[in-house]
Length: 433
Image 1 (cartoon, rainbow, N blue to C red):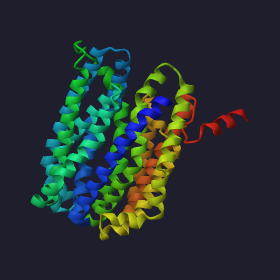
Image 2: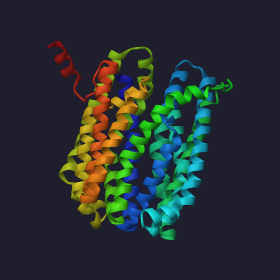
Image 3: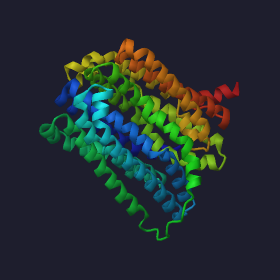
Image 4: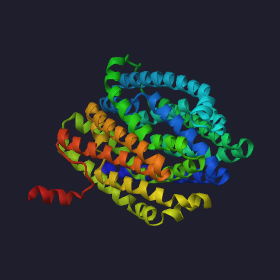
């Protein structure tokens, strides 16, 4: 736990810096484009993020798991082999989906969503399917080597920093599509930086890459693919897309701003999980489930405690917080409160699915993810046509909570411990009784 706290302190600082930069980026975009222009930007972003999750094929946790396990044994040939194979497969898929998105930008914008102004921003944003996928997988690979600082820089600090530098001149020159261009360029620069960091990290290891069986990789990432599509695409982005179909671009802009604002709450969890990930893999592999359960619970409680001031501000001052994006966004205060309440419940339930995925129970995580996805899609179809962005926020929060309930239940069932954010002294007292 001392290692987790020490590493999390660094990750917390870096993630906090990244969250601040991302928040500033979204404020600049919202104030320069307004609610309607921001809506077009967030719709383009949601479409490409869904495609990026699909392109990564569930390799995020798979690369982290195999790289961490091989690095702990100092099997550098296996480290290089699995990372090279994973990146090549994902880059091929990412390039194909980027080209497909570019080609279908106009039919999707004009025919499906009836938003002609979306076509050009979506074309520019389509390149980020490839660049964001590369950036994410390189960050996970670095995390597997326990290069926490480099991983956090690549995934959470550099791309919002690059985008913040590029976004003002890009929007001034090209309007809404300029924001998409800035995002694609920023994720590309961050991916390039991550690749250079990876090469530098393995430069002292002269062992050649060992061939890695693609069947072994696919056996791990196939069930995780479903999980990442649900958690990384369906739950956060599908309500936004459906709102774009039934609602207006302005509604999408307000919900998109609230959704991005709520991600501030997740940086506490990401900071801890960045350090915890390789430890989970190692402890699970060694069968040290009692120690693993204690660390998971303590970490979950620490995350919830650290995020509590932000939870309080978002719940009590939703409209005032949203007005930071501009006067048109103040009406999204209720939406922000709903999304925050969902994150609060999810934080209490703990990272059960995340722990299961790194412990070899990928198929069980997939089942829980599918249940949450079906529930969220059903709620979206029922609530969004009637309640607009409020219905979209309710569906999104419900999907997240259902997924965490499934993760908490399955962790207790298969690993023998619960993942709830409860102080360890209370757990010991309950066991004693």
